[in-house]
Image 1 (cartoon, one colour):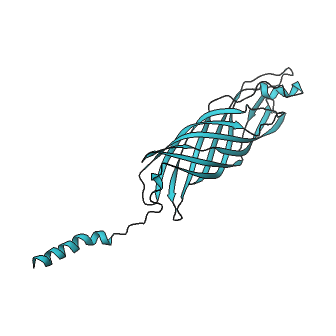
Image 2 (cartoon, one colour):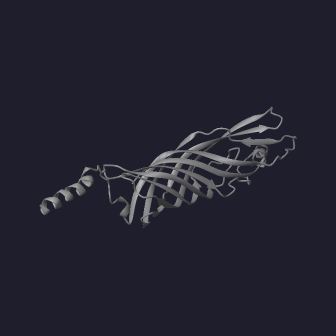
Image 3 (cartoon, one colour):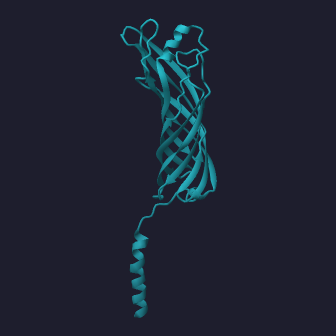
Length: 234
């Protein structure tokens, strides 16, 4: 009798655990590697924060510049990830951003307008700290942030504006690791990049016509901004 009671009690206690549906975790040891590599592809938009200074030309004209709209560019890069602890990783993600910016110059009287395109192939090398939440089945959200250095590989002289080849700044963003059944991790990620240096080149020895310098003289500062949406494969 006592044995029967013990058996029934054991079955009743164990039944809830047997009846619960547990999801199988894909790639369960992905977050325990000391280091790993990957790549990413995505889209971005480039922007410049332009500071107009109200300079008056010898002809009495005052020019202003703005970027009223944006066009998407393509981004591709590699990922190197170093495990620090169960919730933090150090990452370096060298990335090339292929894109362009269209700057509109308008004379104050509104009678003249010039459009200038700047094509940029920017190599950016960020060093980021990735902070992740606890894993929930096959998803793990995270935030990421750090600093970056960048250089423009497609810099072309002779444009209305010339930008310096080197830039520095900081970035932050967020994403979510999705653990796929084919032994890899897919992570949609969005980042916001903020340049910290003035990249406007004021020395325009590349211009043969001094009259073209009025567009550079109309500005005192240009600072980069960028929004990047990538899909990481690790």
